[in-house]
Structures are given as structure tokens and as C-alpha cells.
Image 1 (tube, helix red, strand yellow):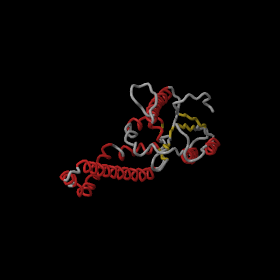
Image 2 (cartoon, one colour):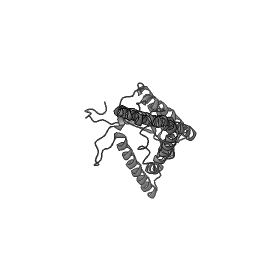
Image 3 (spheres, one colour):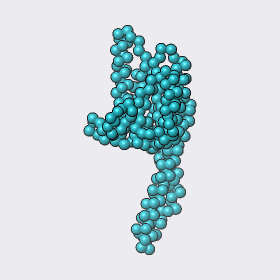
Image 4 (spheres, helix red, strand yellow):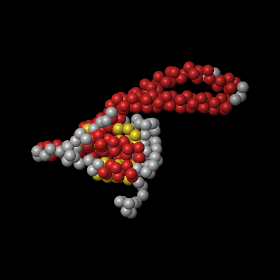
Length: 254
């Protein structure tokens, strides 16, 4: 779940403020590292263990649902701070000509005693320009992401590769705040996940043990996902849910 409520802070064992989403990301990193170590220990003991992972993010402001590992693969090349800064400078140059015509209004208004009004107008113009540049950058990022995600398709990785991908893309979430923190389309996510499991299981041995792990802190905004959850269970998939909340839940299973 990368919807808006996941931006809220969460109690944690560190001395820094942390959002629910970043707390989950830290937990995922630790889990992936631990799994990587366990698999290596098993390998040393002649035990063959294979754990493969795919993931979906739901709650993006554009596209709603996407393959999270595919996003992490391409994110560092599209939504890095350097790439965003390059776009910003390009759009600033484009916009400067548009707003040059307002540049002399401040001194003219000051001359006739309208200084406060002139400063307010300049501030409004500046804010309008900044908002337009921000929209242009986000639209370009969204278009690039959608195109790249369509080209790359599904990403399923061994857990040790997930650990390495997560480590190398630690800034992806920090640079994605304008793209995530939308609504909570859990029903759409479950629909995509159901189709994905059908594709994945068709390529795997019959003794594969599939698990769906769901992390969310809110109610779905696009309908009831339970019928789809039941369809997923019919494929032989165990569903484990983690409901993130700041309240005590007396009966967790309910």
C-alpha cells in the first residue's frame, strides 16, 4: 500500500521520524537480507531452497497499480534527484520567457504607491510558475514510467536479488512522493495479483508454496476486495495480511 495514509508517521525504534511506508521499506530490506543469509546457510548444508518474489504497489496517483520491482529497476534512471533537477532546469528555461513580461510591473507599481500589491502579484505569478513547472515535471515522469513499465513487463526475482535491488534503490521512495500517496485501489491490486499468480504458477512445479503478503493501513477505495481474495485462495495461495494501525486491535483475526 503506497496510498496517502502510508505517509503518516509510525512509532519506531529509531530516533527519527519515519512514515509507515518507509518503516515497511526498512523491514523489507532487513527481511530480504535475512532470507539471503538463510538461503546461503542452507546451500552450505546441501539444502536447495528457492524463494522468488514479485510485488505490486497500489495507491499511485497515476496508474493506481504497478509492478513494484519493475518500478525499482527503472526508477533510479527516471526519478533520481539528478534527473528531476535536469527536467526542472529545462522547464525553468522554457517558462522564463513566458513570465518576462511581468518583470517590470513591480517597480512600476512601487513608483505609484502600490508596493504591497505589486509584491503580492509577483508572489502569485512566481507560485503559478512553480506549480506549472512541477506539473510538467510530474507529467513527464509519469509518461516515462508508464512507457518503461509497459516495455519491461513482469519482474520476478530470487529473494537475494530483491535484497540487492532494494539496497541499490534506497532513494527511490524518497524521490517518488509526487507519484505515490494516492487513493487505496486494493480491489484493482487484487485483480492484477490474481492474474499474475495464474501466470507465475503455470511456469512452476506443482509443489510450489505460493504466499500473498498484503500490507495496508486503510480501507479500499474501489470496492470490496474479498471476492477476489477468495478467488486467489482457490489457486492454493495462502494470504497473510498486515494491517498497519495506531490503534490496539483486540481480536486481530477479526
